[in-house]
Amino acid sequence: MSSLLEGVPLVDHHCHGLVRGELDREEFEALLTEADGPGPLHRSLFDTQVGLAVRSICAPLLDLPRFASPADYLARRAELGADEVARRLLAVTGIAHYLVDTGYLPDLLTAPAELAAYTDASGHEIVRLEAVAEQIIGTVEPRDFANTVREALHARAQNAVGFKSIAAYRTGLDLDPTRPSDAEVEVAAANWLSAARKEAVVRLVDRTLIRFLTWTALDLGRPLQFHVGYGDADVNLRQCDPLLLTPLLRATAGLGVPVMLLHNYPFHRSAGYLAQVFDHAFVDVSLALHNVGLRASVIVAELLELAPFGSVLFSSDAFGLPELYAVSTTLFRQAVTAFFDDGVARGFWPIAEAERLAGMIASGNARRAYDLGDL
Image (cartoon, rainbow, N blue to C red; front, side, top):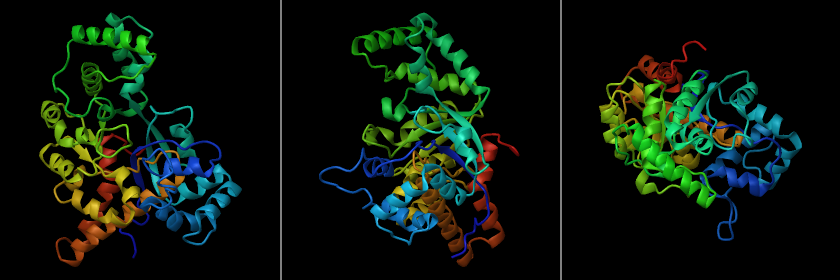
């Protein structure tokens, strides 16, 4: 099947860097899915949709037959070396712009420019809000916390294309939509600092401060991403439903700032509804694609039941492994092609409209929302 998006460059509007250096089997498998790694009762994470997709899609790119054994795949990977593997696997993605969340394990992962250099693409930074606050909390008095954060985010915004919140991991998405006062922020910062010193753990879980970070980012006018839905064992999935963000979306509807709902699975139909009723809401099914494998076309079609075509973006949420970029882009192109080809075949739209709308989802919407222009 030829791809409707063949030759169309992609904007990956949410992703992460690659792990530098070589990986053993356990380390590799720990990066395949959202599990911490293989365990005594699930001994191989190659026995997953994404594991099979790696052996199918990536093995030939490393000069192996499709469905080469995991042992043969990892041996060939080690023989080629991490940089050569990255170059080969990223070369097939067609990604022109990487919008990289730099707030998690930055010392372990490649920076945006380093990631993009593998294929002469462009790399851009997405600033993780909670990471900035965690860097600041032990360095200032609580009364100075709000202004210090504002200054730090303003400085970061000069070179970043957006911000991201992981409120879903820390408090859940049922956020009070009102802006907290500086007095409230000072009290919350004092409580957080006291707890951090007592527990020797600096982890932001305060609802007031996450609301403060959210509004501070919105004031800067950059797109604001929220992790939604599927993630690792650190999330309580019940608190990750995008419908919980409805009050905040109402409160921010007049600001003209895009709010990006990432991942969304298994709540992707709800996310599609939000994208329909809120002009500033954008959606993807990023992380789900490589994990659902064979079912990727179903998930994309379900997202597009309600979501306006102008509100849907591509993202891989690839983390650590170049394999995840190759798998995500392949499944995305197949899924979007299947959706629009079905509409053409059934007379719902002509091929010219299918090509136009598919191109919007692949890159046009992200270029507009993130103001990438012709970068």
